[in-house]
Length: 89
Length: 360
Image 1 (spheres, chains in turn orange, brown):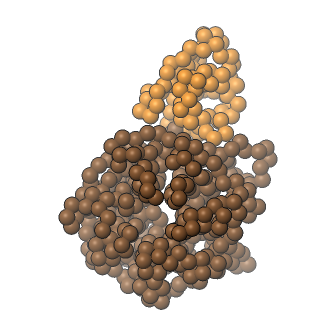
Image 2: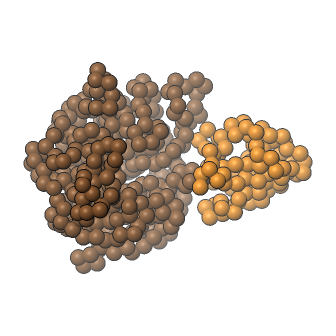
Image 3: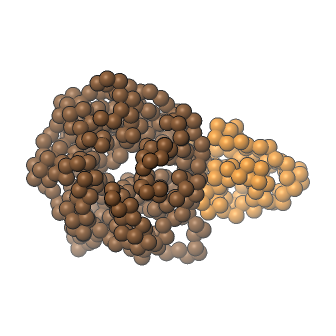
C-alpha cells in the first residue's frame, strides 16, 4: 500500500488524513485521499485538476515528473509527500 | 449612518464598529491570510462572505451567518475543463482570484481573474460560470490590467431590476446584460484608451475601467475611474463621456458614487501611471458635486507631506446615506469621514495593505 502524507500547513484549512492506498500512480493516490476528504482536492489541484502551481508532490523523495498528468508510477511501498512549494511563499 | 464596516487586507479580514464619533477595530478573521474581497450581509440575508487567496492552496470562499464569529467554507467558483486548442492565448481556465462580489434578489455574483463571471443561486453552495459572457468572441481581445490575466472588478446590479447588471473588466471594457446574464452587450462606447495604438483607442472591448460605480437612486448614472481618465454615463452605459476637469491628475483606481445624488462622486487620485503615488506626496480625495463639471480637492485630516499611500480600486467606500466614507491604502492606513469627505480622521495606521472595504 502506498502511503500519502500532506504538509502540516494544510491542517490550518482542512483535514489531512494520512492514507494508505493500493494506488499505482500519483493521481490515484491523491484520489484516494480526496475520497476521505473531498475538500482537500481544491487545496492541492486547480480547476483543471493539475497540481497547483505552488504545491509540490514528492514520490519516494523525488519531485513528481508531470504536474498535469500526475502519472508517476508508485510501488506498493511508495511514500508520497504533498508539500507547499517555497515559490508561493 | 451605518455603524459597521469590513476591511479586507493582505493579512486578514477586520471588522470595524462605530463607537460614538469614532471607528474602532472590533474583530479579526483569517489573520495572516490574504482576503481579496468581501460582501457584507445584504439583500435580506445575514450571510457575510469573504474571498481568500491563499498563497499556495488557491482561492477559497467562506461565509459567516453570525457576523464573523464563525465561518464555514463554501464552494468556490471553478472553471470548466479547458478545451484542447482553446484560442485565447495565455489564459488558463483556472481561478486566480475573486475580485468582485454582489448580491441581489437571491442571486450571488462573483467576478474573477481570469475574466469569468460566476452566479450562485444558493448563497455560495454552488457556482456556475456565466458562459454567455465567457464565450463572447470579444474575450479573445481582452488582456490583463494590473494582473497577467483579465479580471472582473465591478459588478453593478440595477437596484430595482435585479436581472439588469453591468460588469467592468480590466482590460475588457464594460458589458451589460438585461436578462440576468443570458445575453451581453459591450457597453463602454466613448471610453478612450491612451495605452493603445491610435486607431484602436476607441475600441470598447479593450478599455481599462479601473472601477465602475452606479448611483443607487439614479441607476442610469455610472462613474468610471479609468486607466487614463474619468468617464461618466447618464444613459445606462449606452455611452460614456470623458471628464477632464479633475485637478492635477485624473489617474487613480477608486471611485465611490453618491447613493442618492447622481451629481456627486469621490475619487482617490494618484500620479499616472508608472509612479502611482499621491501627487506631491500629499493625499487628497477629489469630489465633484456637479456631475463632473468641477472638482474639489479635499485634504482635511489627510497627510500632506511624505505620503506614499495608494488607494486600490476597492479601497474607497461610501455608506448608504452618502455622508460617511472610508478609505484604506496599500500602506495600511485607514481613514474615515463623516461629512462627505470634507474632513478625515485616521482610524488605524498599521493595518496590512488594504484590498477592499465595505459598509454593512
